[in-house]
Amino acid sequence: MEQAAKDLKINGIGKVSGGTYGKITTDGIATVNGEVLCSSLTANGTLKLKDSIQAGQFRLNGNGSTAATIGGGKFRVDGMFKVDGNVQFEEININGMLKAEGSAVGERADIDGGLNLGGSAEYEYLKVHGQIQVDGMINAGEMEILMAGPCRAKEIGGGRIQVRKKTGSRFFLALLSPSLATRLTAEVIEGDEIVLEDTTAKVVRGNSVRIGSGCEIGRVEYKHHYEADSKASVGIAEQV
Image 1 (cartoon, helix red, strand yellow):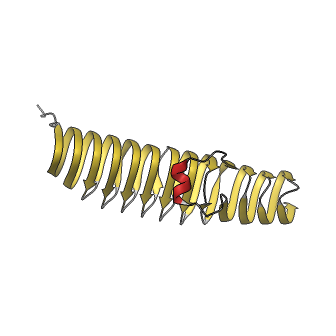
Image 2 (image 1 turned 135 degrees about the horizontal axis):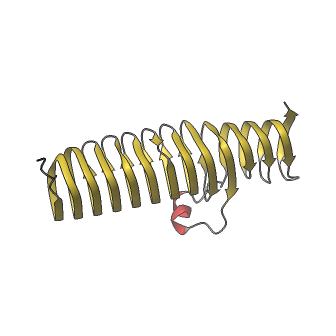
Image 3 (image 1 turned 60 degrees about the vertical axis):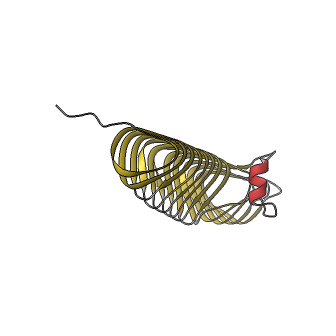
C-alpha cells in the first residue's frame, strides 16, 4: 500500500529540504531547498524557494521568491512574488505584484495590481486591473485590461481584446509609477473584436475595431466594422 505524503508545517524561522509532501504551511520566514511536489502550499510571511515547485494549490500572503519555474493548479498571491523562471499554473490570482523572468502560461489569470514578465503571457482568459508589462507577446482568447499605469507588450493577440483606463487608481500603483502616463504601448495588436482607449500601436488588425479617445495608431486593418473617436489619432484605416 502506497504511503501518503506527509504534511509539513513551519512556524517562525525555518529551513526544509525539497521532496514530496501533502500540505505545506508556513507562518513566518521559510526557506525551501530543492524541488518540491505537494498537494498545497500556504505561506504567511516570507517564502524563499531555491528550486522548482509543483503544487495543486499555492497561496502566499506576504512576499516571496523562487529561483526556478513554478507550476500546478491554482496560484494566488496577496503581496509580491518574484520568479526567476516560468509561471505554469492553470489559474493565477494576483492581488499585488507578480514578476517573472520567463513566461506565464495557463487557462485563467486575474491580476489586480501588476504583472511583469520577461517572456510572454498566454491564457484563455486574462483580466488585468492595474499594470501589465510583457517583453514578449500577450495572447488570450478573451482579454480585459483596465489600466492604472503604464502597460506594454511587443505584440498582443486574441479573440476579444478590450483596453480601457481605470479611474481612481490605487495608491499602491501610483507609488510604482507616479510620473508615467497610463496607456498601453504595443507594436501590433491583432484580434477578432478590438476596443481600445489610450493606446499607442503601429498596427491594429481585427474583424471589428473600435479606436477610442487617447489612441495613437499608425495603421488600422479591419474586415467588417471600424470606428474611431474624434480624440483619437489614426494614420491609415483600410478595410481588407
